[in-house]
Image (cartoon, rainbow, N blue to C red; front, side, top):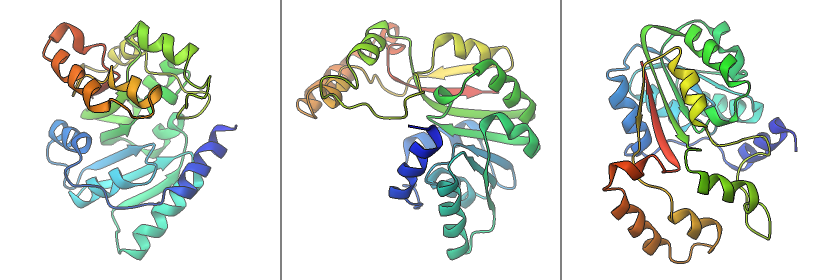
Length: 236
């Protein structure tokens, strides 16, 4: 299925809504950014618009971009209906954001692993961030060869669900190194998401609490955290 068609279908079923103010991803991004009031902030791959609404509420002037015209139209209509004037939704590719001017902050939630060629995107991102600006990305992680083997050989087969479009692939360590050519990059693993994935994909939710308990215990060991399927990338 065409990528744009896939995401238009998703956002036809998932309309714009205010986010949970206690969302841990948004909270971690705000901690990295600091005060965003009056700042120009790009919400890259804004999707249902929840993250844009969060930062707009904090006083940022948000430019929200997505390749899905339905996502952009939904967010624009929501802003009009709710009197929100500091969000500008624009249908735009991630590779064209340098045409929108420079930003103090860039936020993205599970967007980087969709972007190829990644080295080109890294350069476009660098051109889009002001000197002294920051970016924050919540991403998946291709570090674990075990998880990637299951992703390539099991997920989407034998009745096991596959989430996301056909072109995406978890963010690889070499792609993080491409970002490091243009930014200082810190990586935070907010949790160890590893064994619980077996519950989600293979066991249809069974034993989830048990698997999460294993993850939580192993998270205590620094050397194991890089195997987590979740990571925060803090760019400055």
